Image 1 (cartoon, rainbow, N blue to C red):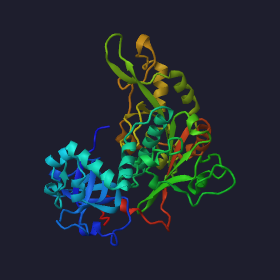
Image 2: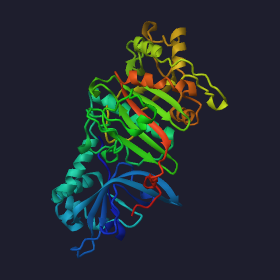
Image 3: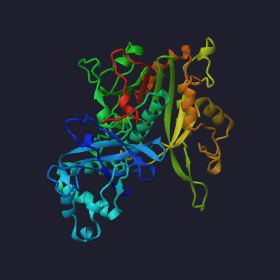
Image 4: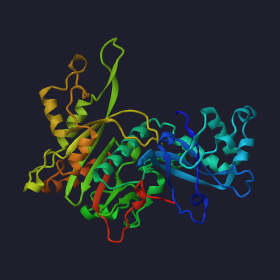
Length: 455
């Protein structure tokens, strides 16, 4: 992974006052647009130190810069998350003294101290030396930074594809629901990785909690209360009691992992999105494309999916019977609630919040395309699904169709989905996302809005 920018950032008195500071894993601050930090930059928060006699200050907080948002002419507010408060501030003069001699001759940290609104980016080699010195002077900060590096290391093997698709399914459900989620939701620090578990590297562990409403019987599997609302007969089972739940002024989004098989034996990921208010299910199955040569001796490659037999078998199972509308509100532009997302098969990097590139294809279309032979464009007229021979939707269009009720089950079709989902969870991993009304006793997660002051 490329080295991070290292940026010194001027903290105000509220940020450095531990008594006034609210407990949080994120902060926001305003910077001049021309000097705002890039996403992923390591921020060294410089504040006052009690034993500092030359006003150089000390490193009090460290964190990662995330997205920025315009707040005024020439100024942006940047979210910094996660953040770590050093147990003991590290004075800048001690940091300077701990640098290698050749770096000290070229770099005077005190002359580069940041000003409010104007953070100071260190040259790459100097920034690396400063981080190494901080490791030495503050072991706790060093451990935290090491976890960041671990989150930058790609995972390979059977878990990598599952975690990559799992994270994308979570992100897709959040986009469809419109319920705001934390900026660092999909950031997983290295010390929180557990690739073999449900959501092991999908969520920041801070947002995965054991469900207090789960039914605690003597079985290994626990059920989320929201899951029980529309699954009273227990057809679906959670592999873990860990869930994530986010709320706004009106709605709540609950995300659970459903699987009756060990995750290492699950074949891919399905997303089942349920809008309780509209009583609509939408089902998305992930398929992995691989890079294949476009022709003999051409030296070029393209992304393609070639599993025709597997695809045909699964299309045959995607039958929920009648899905006819009973009135105008029940009408759907896309009558079949099943979709495929064809994604690139790459390694998984836990600290990378970006979603998977791919294409959204209705199951109905694939059935017709297989029947009419339009997908036989591979070598020797072999079967393949590619960007060039397939009609597909981009992410934003698909999200809009589902969110506005133009795709998904009708009232009649919804009744059959649970049986399909229960069958899927026997072999695959199912990410179940449910949009419901916010409970009367629940408080909206207003802190997730990037414009809110956290200090």
